[in-house]
Amino acid sequence: MTDSVDFTVRELDRIIEMAWEDRTPFEAIKYQFNLTEKEVIKTMRIHLRPGSFKRWRKRVNSRTSSKHLKKRAPDMLRFKCSRQKGISGNKISKRYV
Image 1 (tube, rainbow, N blue to C red):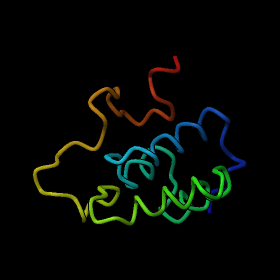
Image 2 (cartoon, helix red, strand yellow):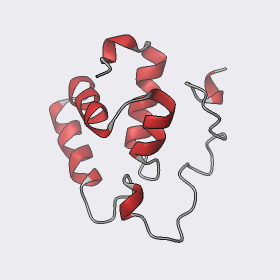
Image 3 (spheres, rainbow, N blue to C red):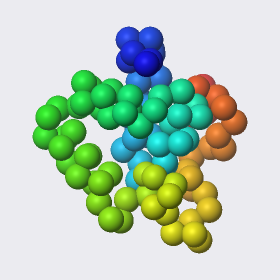
Image 4 (tube, one colour):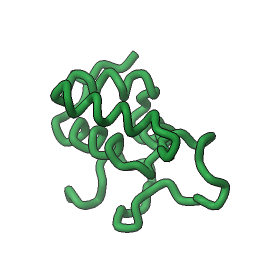
């Protein structure tokens, strides 16, 4: 299990940002940072205030959430925000460069 201590502040910021984005599935976080869904939840629990974490979990578990690829509508093909740069396996979004 990967510990959040292994990540830089920028990487943690990006993981939390991706977790907050409704259209970014856990599989994308797994691809970029090798964190399972359980590890993302643990990271969010550690780094968010309790109320923020509860709101995030409620939203992720809602019927309208698209955080899980299996729950997505078949017509939803992309897994990133339209304003996000293409994901190429880079650890950090291009906006930091």
